[in-house]
Image 1 (cartoon, rainbow, N blue to C red):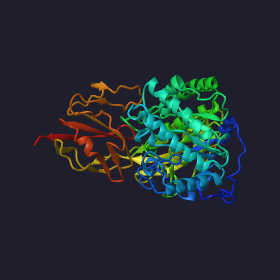
Image 2: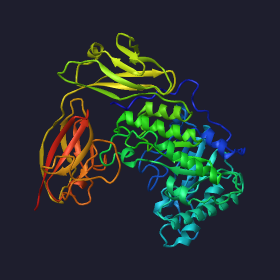
Image 3: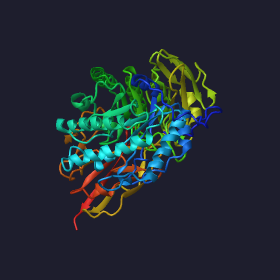
Image 4: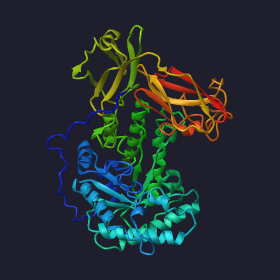
Length: 560
């Protein structure tokens, strides 16, 4: 599927209005703020980059916030890593140039009417890991000194600026959690005693790892009498799906988030704090199976909305809003977020692509619609509306595309057309019509020297309308995927694969997208790091969409 879609220009009259009063303060109840925050967005890999802004992605510019505002997002989270801009003990003075830059970006967002979450980000593992007992007292002191400086700089900003004490506290035990409970208490006291508007400013507090289960078990409200506190968690469940690790491309556990967030909601009531889910989303979103991604996103955001929680999607400038090209990578995913965050039910088509094999007569194609109480209004190809009863038929929630109509769309290999499905409510859905034949890889056997591979393995590939989905690794001549040791996690994807018995040191059988393998328009690649783990010969099985397409490459390990 082609997912890099040009965003619409900022609509006339929709440009974000600068000049909102960012220096007056009107206390807002934290539960009201959560409702008003609506759909939120993270400015990832920017002010949080190590060692500085620009190290991981281009510096942010004002028009980025114009695009985020015009899309319909109401809040932004600004992760900031401070440690590379701080002086030595005992004062730990923040570089005034860095403080000015953070202030500039904060003001860009506030001026456009966003709620803005400002935090201490990768410091959490670079030096502020309170699960490590070394210099523990000094770490607490340094955090208080840092927050005293942040609170002083921003004490006169409006109520829409929210402070978040620390991103993803590190650790694994109740003792670790108690250190962060103490940290939250200390920082709340620092902020409350810093003057200006900070006595009533909203403060966002994390539990251990911002993990939901650990937060429920171990988080303590530092001051039940303080009515301006909020709780934050993150969620990337299941990690093997959202990250494209271990070969997983598919998700369909539709009740998962309703159950999980129900438990979190009960805990929220118990401690008297509203919840913001500060990070979530599918990473490597251009490669996850699109129907699964869209359903996943809808279920996540809609469950959060049901329980009165705000959500802030994680974005590093390539997964959602492509900041360099100023386009939305997946406008459908964006619109699903915006609708679900308002409680609007989205509808779905049961697949994101129809693959038509080259040389095989084209027949009618049957699609199952998940209407969720909505009605299908129209189907479009470009600006042309398809004719119901001629180009397609609809019986209840079953839609059949006429084979003769599809034949008029199909000529060459690759995506031939994209059909758009418009419903009376919710995001529109798309369906790619793709003609394909079997992919062709330039080699089926490669020899490497054990532990001495200097470059990634590049294999020229004719995709022929297919696209690379995932890669598995198996011992040579062990192609039966029902043998071997299964990955230690529950997944439903039939492509989930098995660990080889002894061909690798420390390597999972299912390779990880981007870390271990990748592809471009004409090649597939296996990382040199993977190849240098190999002890013995193995088969790399390249699996393509559609799901019945697969090419095996033998990798022979030669010992010097």
